[in-house]
Image 1 (cartoon, rainbow, N blue to C red):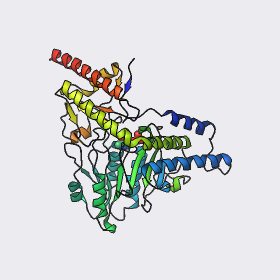
Image 2: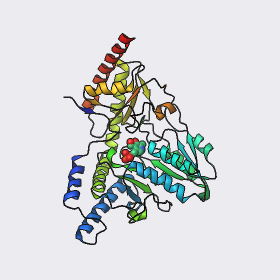
Image 3: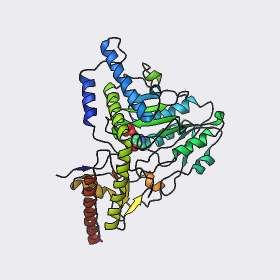
Image 4: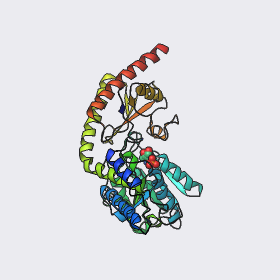
Length: 386
Ligand SMILES: Cc1ncc(COP(=O)(O)O)c(C=O)c1O
């Protein structure tokens, strides 16, 4: 049966090279990096190599990479760690209304401890206006947390401009800039050093690496309080025996993504445009959620008026095409805070198709045909019930 997986923003299939390297780390090189004997030294070397590969893909120094158990944990460490470390300087945080729950709920948690959080709205394309951020800045703002690519609609936030704005503030008044780059790392250009970013959260399973391993890049000099107490691994910022196979897999996945990034981005951009044009010409009532131009090339969010997103997902699945209604974590909730922030009406059910570097043009063409057929079938069904 036909099987086309277009839910790569939820998670991806592990690359065979990733799996092979992880199996070796589990079976042969299974030592604890803290052990003093040879097995420990081999495991430590694997961690060093994984860290170097991730750092190179991000264009940063390896000793500024801290491995965590997920992108979610990396975001929590950035937000709660900053709140705790800078509480003497201020208790105000700025973020956006369209962040992933890993950021929104971490912000809510610090709010419960007495911090103030400003949730900035975005425009109808899902993009933050830098002027709104500028207006929200206060002398007691200690952190600005803005995602790079939105996981539901693919809007790309003006991180470079935000970084420049914050860098123009006097040093004593400058909040840290944290970027959730889980959806952009290895897929879009991101230059933390030159863009004035202080922390970047990333995750391996979005780029053909394993689940359960993420990382936070922390610019040297940035002060964070750890979330976890223990054996002081990751230079005291993230205790717990290192997930050596996960780090090895993350390194291989990051290296592959980094090597192919420019070529993949170029072809995906062309396929995304072609796909949207095909759907539009067959079903003119379709609505594209998110930016018309300048969106992340791997995310397409479409709404078909009158058709519930969940039903579309299941009809597509029955034809072998896997998509989602929005983010994987919130797809069990009927509503999307991101689409509401963009002003999309509640009744306009949406689906998200997301590509990876393993997606082919033939798959995109086939998926377009299946989608058109499914939408027409559902439209007939709903009209009949009318
Ligand atoms: C934008 C964004 N941030 C954070 C996360 C969480 O990453 P993880 O699944 O590694 O916890 C996701 C995953 O869906 C995401 O899309």
